[in-house]
Image 1 (cartoon, rainbow, N blue to C red):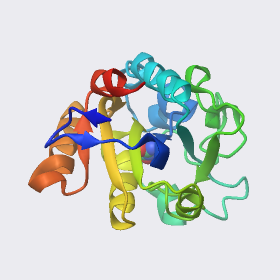
Image 2 (image 1 turned 30 degrees about the vertical axis):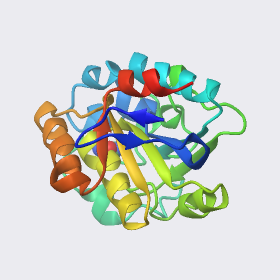
Image 3 (image 1 turned 30 degrees about the horizontal axis):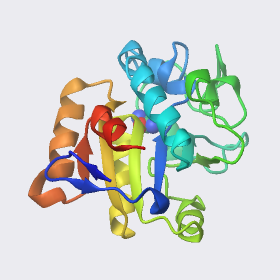
Image 4 (image 1 turned 180 degrees about the horizontal axis):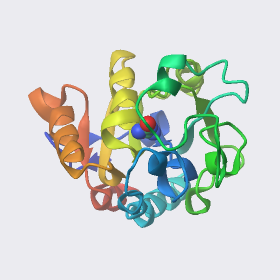
Length: 219
Ligand code: C5J
């Protein structure tokens, strides 16, 4: 399958690809979560949900592997470095009780993936304590076992967890495609810059494409 992408076409081999959906959890996308405690306007992120949903449905119909991640820490915070918890001046810190339960803690209501993109049985769901999806998770092993060498990325936020995960993927030998209208940042200029830096220098980190380009190519 040839996807019209930048800086040049992406040859998608669905049998050896996975759709990786980064951190589309209530903590970042809904009011009262981690994103809002940091002072961000979460409505910006909500805008990508319909496009993400369309891709997820099409990918499932085509029989592709799906991976969902959540940025999540253990309830005892043993996997949350104090430097991460203490940084900045959020209104609530990781582990504090918020309107959707404890902020960024596994199992809390705020940590759940939003209903519109809820995982289905058989899909991989990973809790990740870092920004990157490969750090302190079994993702690389699971993908290797499944024979996956290409990753299509969606999710939030573009310049933080999505870009970090793409760079980790790049260093582990995966080809990575980022869907431009299925990722968002609280800072539109950071999203624009990330898309440009990913695909610069002949796809130094990966490719970018619209969701329409992928949907057109999928069976
Ligand atoms: C952040 C993320 N922004 N999922 N996490 O802290 O991008």
